[in-house]
Image 1 (spheres, rainbow, N blue to C red):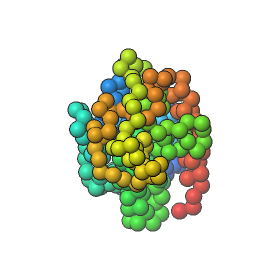
Image 2: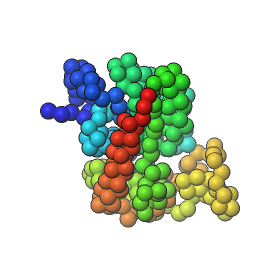
Image 3: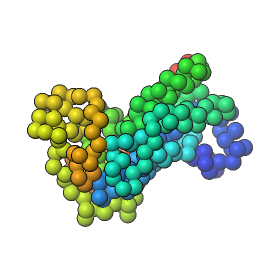
Amino acid sequence: MHKTLISEMSWYEFRDAMAFNDLIIIPVGSNEEHGPHNPLGTDTILARELARRIGEQAGVPVAPEIPIGSTHNLAAFPGTVNVDPMLLRKVVFEIAESYVQHGARRFLFVNGHGGNSNSLDFVCDDLHAKYNDVIAMHSEWWKVLPFISQYKCDDHGGKHETSFVLDVDPDLCHMERAKTVPRASLTERLTYTDKFRFDGVNIPTCGVTLDKLTPMGNYGARAEEATAELGAEMSRIYVDYCVELVKELKRVYL
Ligand SMILES: [Zn+2]
């Protein structure tokens, strides 16, 4: 039987899978609040499931998910777990490096959490710096979908992200608690959606924790409008895109 998840393979099966493939997908998530209606593991659950769907469709192995990420700005919410971005960089690098020792040369990190992006930038550079014949990149659904679909995806636990969770497992969401949180902002002119903005102009970062902006923890597009159908549609578009990316990544001469 063909297997996608490395954790379900024996080492014989993994060795044989790597005999004619050098690309591995690694899901990276987070455990953090996503509003009163979503599970703490939302980012991990989505990264794992999207990675599995991509791996299955593209016929490439998927590594065990990394369940904990860097999420300092949500640390005030109970159940949120945060690790230092430089530690995450080191852990993800060493996981990827283990696969390099066993034949992997190409990596796609399917990231479920924005706070991990900086660490993954470093990991991709680190891998290529140490192994000249290794190429690595990361992908985030909320950064991809606005380019290839009508979905803007600038929410945290809002309509888009909640729809993804509903698609994976509707029993994980308490939709009766899903409410729109008024636009988060520090002042009238210093606003926050997916980024801080002053008079509408992006400010790359601002070290303010999210509990100062949104008491319920979610923000952006209306959470109560989330549906499993929307989640399935966005997932299909994103997975198809990533399958093409995997094919192209396999064509890169190393
Ligand atoms: Zn999330």
